[in-house]
Length: 318
Image (cartoon, rainbow, N blue to C red):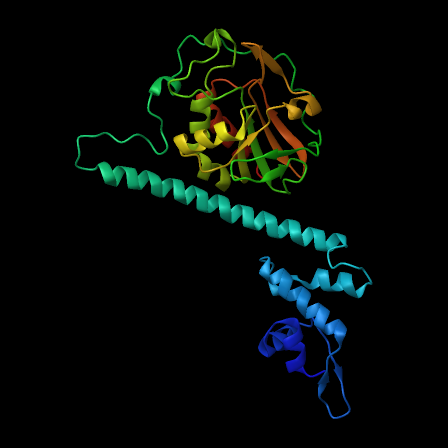
């Protein structure tokens, strides 16, 4: 078939076909008179390039998929090289999303300052909450001791567990990608007007989840620049509760919800009970290539923990 017929069947322009050919992605036969002769296999290749490009994969990086088809695979993504290209595209997209989220948080902060400038109202910090009792830590909080409950974690693979995030996605913890992912795990976030569990301040390491989240919010851009690909907060509170926290505190990253404490059970994470509820003890995981690279435990003081993670990233560059 001629180039016009190929373009019509594949849903692209003739200019696109010539571009694919210039990259060596398709190689038509030549007739005796020198004209190109395209076949059904070329139609399939061009359709595959078009579909991948619509997913955000640049035309120049579709070659592994086409080579997979040429090798006789039924699907273009049956081969390891194709899967690696998917992962690279996802990681790049995640990086852009998180960078945009950080810029959004900065714009919100500037908007609040500008909107209140010249008025008698003092604006709260970006995403800050009314009711500062959750943002201020008592001076006499008990310091948690290192009981060795997280010593086994470095070098441990993340489980094939999918948890919902506040963006409405299911996040596979064993497929976070090759870049470093910081997951800070905490018991529960207090909410203004809602009582904390009885005796909360007397439980070592329990108090301080809101200041900790605010710390990761304020250091988010620094963490990305220091090598973190993603940042997540994680607790046993449901997604609706987590969404309220993200909105109220203006968090530029998503939160994960694990009401069943599946991560604690599969990894042997430390937990405790308060008011009859089982909760995560506070710790932070640095995950790279689906394996736990480092674990922070115990975490104290929580309002300075984001800076502790940032320091570790800077001292351990990739």
